[in-house]
Image 1 (spheres, chains in turn yellow, blue):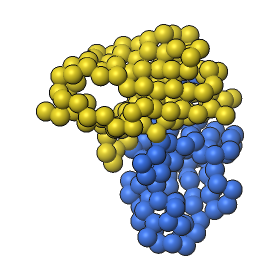
Image 2: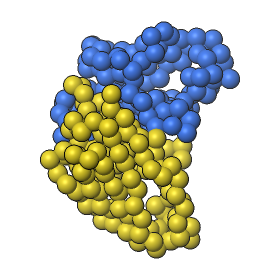
Image 3: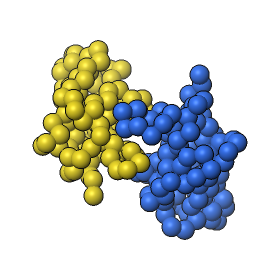
Image 4: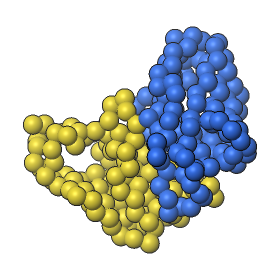
Length: 112
Length: 115
């Protein structure tokens, strides 16, 4: 059974710092891995999608890596800003119907 | 092209009442997923539907929960005789076809509070 874990559960850093969020999964048989952002009381915003054959994806200040064999992904945020404060969710696509299996999220606070 | 629509955005029910959550997928999308997010937890898959068919309901509680996606109209997640433990955010996602390379597009969610 696929399980997704995110560490740390919460993170608070000063503005301007670079930071790394971690995601691990137990079964390497995934189709892809996605990182989402969730603001309090809001919906989900897809940030990056990495196919299983890819090693990384970049979008602006965000870079996500995938090491399928070790069951790990990282989300790197460069030059953090207060507007980056949110919960970041990692999810893998697996199973015959491509449903998403989710981590519990990392709650990120960027202090001005 | 409007995004995935969910309504209501907030729903308050007393224990024992019924809750009906609606999801209108993006235009042209015929695949719908429902996920539930309990407080302070990640999302959990509930059910996957195509038009007029339930394909996978392995994540749905066996009792009180049902889902449908009729030929016309939105997908409905129905919770009968709600209990306090049903309080959660319910998210709907849609995709145009069953392809792992496609991301799922999420609605804003319905936040259900059971008093």
